[in-house]
Amino acid sequence: MSLPTSYLDQLPGCFGKSDHVFAGSPESKLQARALLSDLLKSDYALNDLVTEMENYLKSLSLSRYHITTQSLKAKNLETYW
Image 1 (cartoon, rainbow, N blue to C red):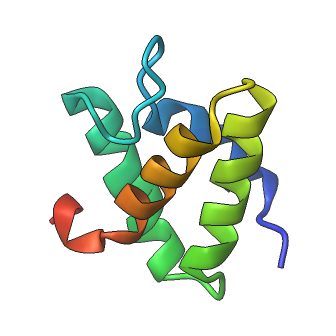
Image 2 (image 1 turned 60 degrees about the horizontal axis):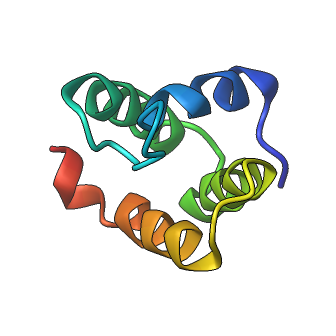
Image 3 (image 1 turned 90 degrees about the horizontal axis):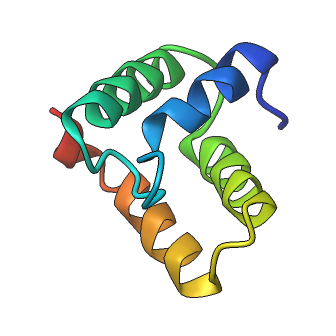
């Protein structure tokens, strides 16, 4: 299921501007927490978000290793609460 634009617009703020690490700074962690919280209240699945994350990171021409690492980090929800 494709995520609505409102989620996709928030996604870049969940990553560091230079290192592209998911929730790696206090600001990006707050953004990630808000996005994941909204997602959990919706009809969308975490896997939908992870797919869009991977597409976003691919659009930045990042390595497959980095994309996989950040996807796994996003799936570890206990990190954000």
